[in-house]
Image (cartoon, rainbow, N blue to C red; front, side, top):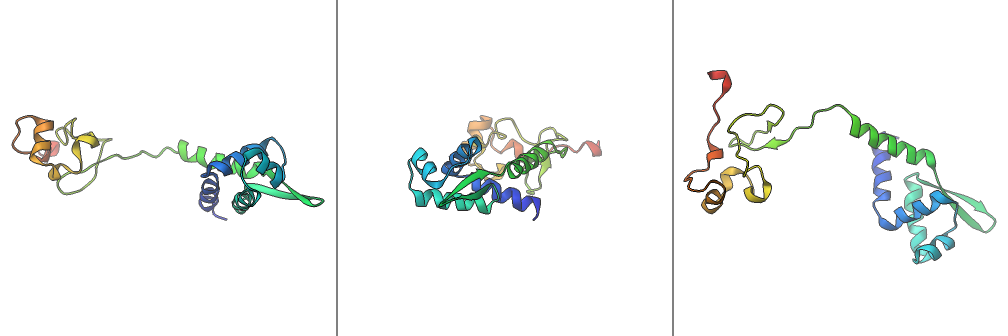
Length: 161
C-alpha cells in the first residue's frame, strides 16, 4: 500500500479522542473490549467500533484468548507513521508564503520585494482579504490619510533600473 495512504488512514484513525485513549491504553498492555469499556467509561459497542477503525488502519491487532479477543498495538505501524511524519518535517523543501498582488500572482517571500505590502496589510486580521478589496475605512485604519491603497501600487522593478 502507498505510504501516503497508510499515513492518512493512520492519522484519521488517531484523530478521535477515544481512539487515541484506547491506543494509549493498549500500548501499556493487551486488553479486551470489556476492560477498555470499564476503564474509559463508554459502551462495549462503542469500543468495538473504535477498535474496528484502529484495526482497519493497521494500528491494532487482535488475538483470541478463549472466549475473548485481546487487542494490542502494532508497534511497527506506529513506527511507520512516526517515521513518515518525521520525514515530512525534515525534508529540505523551501516553503513559500504567498502575498497576493493586483494580478493575483503569488510572490515568494524568500526573495523579498520592497514596497509589495506594508506591515499592517500583512496581518490577515487587518487586511480582511486582498488589498484591492479593502474598504476606504480599512485603508484609513492601516494607512492613515491615504486616499488609495499604497500596497496596490506596483513596486519598482530592480531589473529595470
